[in-house]
Amino acid sequence: MKKIAKFDLNTVKTEDIIFTHTSSRDYEMSRVYVIEKLDSFIVLEGSHCSCYGFEDTTWEAIEYTEKEIEKLAMHDDEKWKIFLKEYLNI
Image (cartoon, rainbow, N blue to C red; front, side, top):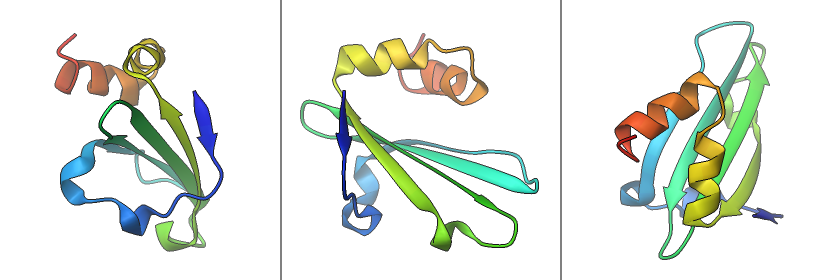
């Protein structure tokens, strides 16, 4: 696991995004992207309040190995349950 200090979402190719999840519409919303690289995954997470859209979101990017992403996906969280089912076929 390695935090990426400056990650530019605009540099990501659409075909590299393997999973996205946006929380239910509410006062605060969050979004997660899982981006597949050659030998790793980048998990990009961000949130905002209803005053601002995702354009004003501060994103946090963390790079994971395949084993680390599988372990992360085992958390009891709805977005990761969806990821397990759709991408990892678990």
